[in-house]
Image (cartoon, rainbow, N blue to C red; front, side, top):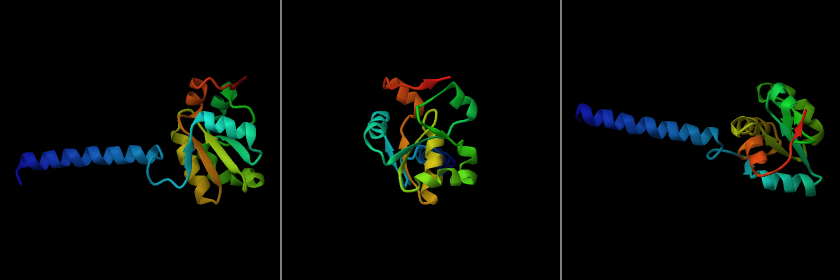
Length: 137
């Protein structure tokens, strides 16, 4: 193999690795949970009593705005605070963050601990873009 071929191969492997990592972080691959649209999440919250709502952003973000009825447990401390969700262990848990990355991480934590998360694709940003309301403080 020539030096140019090795460089080209390395370039393509790096691009594939970055794309794979991005797909993993977004929950597009290797996820044991479902991602749903904001409108689907809204409909579930309106029509299904067997769901709970979890905000995994920071307290500062939550205090600025959140979806009504949400429980706040930041993703950084979720694994240590799963007992806060013991009452909803048998319910579907709709999980959201700002744009969707932290909620994917939180959904993985929840699945690993026997919960049934539904990740809101695009987070609260997509929720608002769909014209759905938030509770400002």
